[in-house]
Length: 183
Image (cartoon, rainbow, N blue to C red; front, side, top):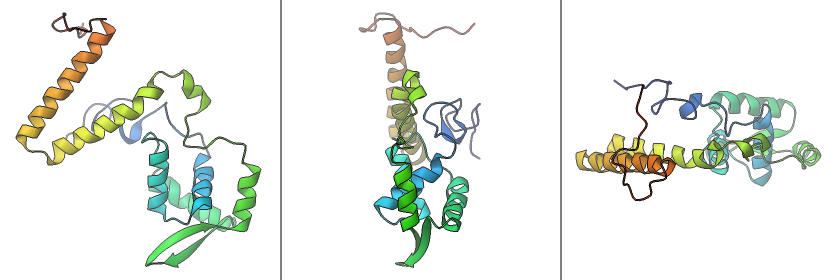
């Protein structure tokens, strides 16, 4: 049985997993632009497109198959892309009409870059690192042996304490447990 924490995801709370809100989210309609820009570089299949968006957004944005595949179908219906069968897989490539459409939108920022309103959000710079640490923790928990999980627990505990020491302005760890107390 898989344990679910408060907040729905394996790490709970806003900003983690598929239910995250706020920072790093793409603006409505940007899936179209992201797919077109990636296909202008080279033909790809749907999975490769999702991976490329996740990599370029540093793990902050990974559109779901439920948004990518219908968007690909819509772009194909509009004549902006076409699907081709090659190497045993269905891939998509941009058409001349798709290139023309992209030229009209050339001045728009890349959809995987943080929105300008995210610049004032302090989570924007730390969120990708927290997500990467969460993924690494999940891997250790999933495939690590007991010694590795124990070492990971110690490392994460020390990292948490170190973060609270930063807030307490106690770089040398003089306060034994600087964590705020629950009321």
